[in-house]
Length: 296
Image 1 (cartoon, helix red, strand yellow):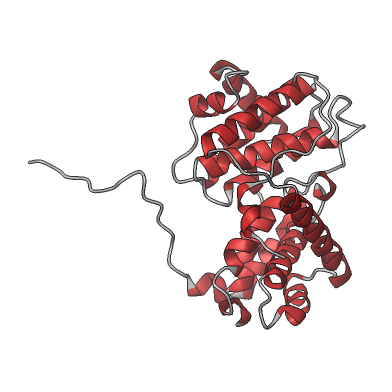
Image 2 (tube, helix red, strand yellow):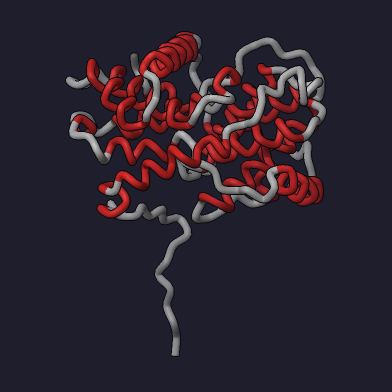
């Protein structure tokens, strides 16, 4: 008897809304209680990491974001990978030459946890322009896991977006709110200044910035209502919102006509390789693709 499997690997299926999850406040409460466990323990620049500077982390995290975009990864993969990267860098000193290797390993691990079809070692090596080998990645995967104490689940800013938007009426004012919020959460995870920020704070600020940027009718009251839900200090959230708006304004103002996606990621890999090889790099990394679609 012949068996036919109609499943296609190209399909990306989203789960239907679960009323139990989104109507039970205990779920959101558990996220808030657990998030502090996964926040990076320190600002590692100049302490644990003697050879890595903030701009290097910006470059490599932007490269990670572009790889995720090019491979059409789930939105939740990138924040988790950056969380792994920051937690590892808090625990283990490395040279700048090894930073892209660690970033690639973190992408590999995060895709295994949160992606329905994980990234392959060979694909990630390709995105580094073969500056690292598959054998190196496999060896460092064990090192990263050991430094993370095999704690490969984490609460990220992405996890809060749907829990907030499903509980408020103003989320229906514009269908782009969710997309923009996810984009801004990703942008926050590329910013070295926000390494030790609570995920709930990043999510609150990203949602508020997205609603304001779309000029939704409820823009004036969004920050207060989300802060009450996520137990975030409104002043702290406003500070991050303004930081997001400055970054988006700066990035969009400097946009140039972008090459094709494959060329862009290859160029980013080359730029990252220059930074990791010790070459001085003072320019800004490339703009994450989705930021072009966010208008303030």
